[in-house]
Image 1 (tube, rainbow, N blue to C red):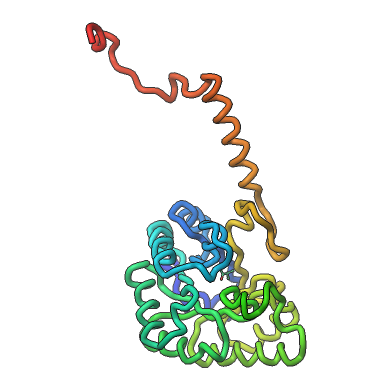
Image 2 (image 1 turned 120 degrees about the vertical axis):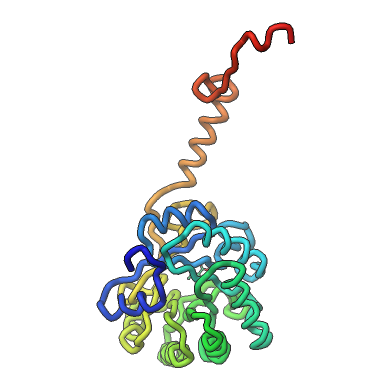
Length: 277
Ligand code: KIV
């Protein structure tokens, strides 16, 4: 990888070497820079930004303009990580030309190197067409948040034999369509491991156990930056929200009592310049 941009083929080689693939989401310039400097191989500009950054109720409200705005910021910050941008709800379902046009915008205007779409067999043809146009595609099966209303809420997917078989055939259809990796979200660990063994492309798990080739988490979840809830599959490495509250309370207090700013944070001129003003 030697300081150059990570490619989809580097991720494939990591699977072949049995090297785990850590991924995180990012939505802005500073976070992308910090993650890049920490050595993350791939960053997803997830449509989870709808909830964790924009305060929407679900990913269904996220637009192409939202995705472009945040993908551009991430692309300015991450110089080495592979940047994958989520295609938002209804940006790839209406027609193949709509899907191609929007995928191209995320790459050309946004600065991403790849896109992600949700769904199995039903989106395989769309994935195929985008890949054929030269844009790498990542799949996403299991719990697919853009279908929240159809699913009737959050669900672990693949708990019956029938559902497990469907997930395996979805994963195979996506691999055949040419996707370079597939996210398995909230899939039972043993099934995720089996899918991982059956595919040549990397599986990236979220809430799908340790048997996947890689893991992805929403950066706000692991940093404690999302105030509404912490998903069961997330580990909070830090409580950023508490640090922000504490720092803001200290700042408010210091401004009120005149303890901030001090001379150290101020700028001065020669007093003589003010005489007679
Ligand atoms: O939008 C997102 O952040 C995602 C990940 C949870 C995989 O799709």
